[in-house]
Image (cartoon, rainbow, N blue to C red; front, side, top):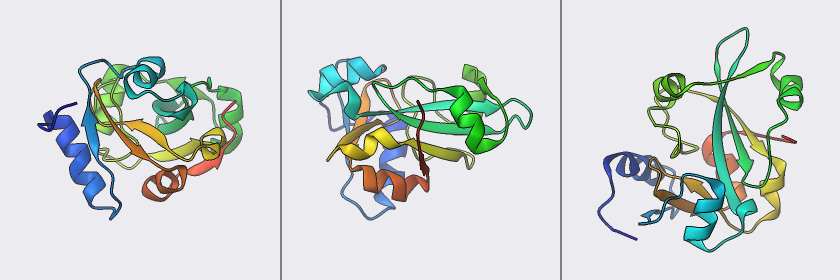
Length: 159
């Protein structure tokens, strides 16, 4: 872990500081790009990884952020029930435009534009979870309750 954060991770830390919680970005020499890699680097379960996935509404073309437990796959049909339209996968350019971050390090907060956010109900079972912090090597620890508060996300069943 290093104390000199990369620029994107510094940006996330600055946003986290505004919430009034003790949330600290840490960078690892090992990759945290995937949920499995993050769990390995941190020493937690894959389920404790809060992976931020960006989709877009098929009709509206609006970004949708789904923060899922690292062990879960998103059931796009289930999400359609919440947003009223089908989901499409977002490409790297769309993700960067709407979040300001590259795929592989998308944090749940600090995006360049407001994004409708849904949080996997399965994350609520953990005392602590870990989320990406702007780079493929940066993460931060938080509780599910804090995640809901800082993202203003709706808790849903994503499976």
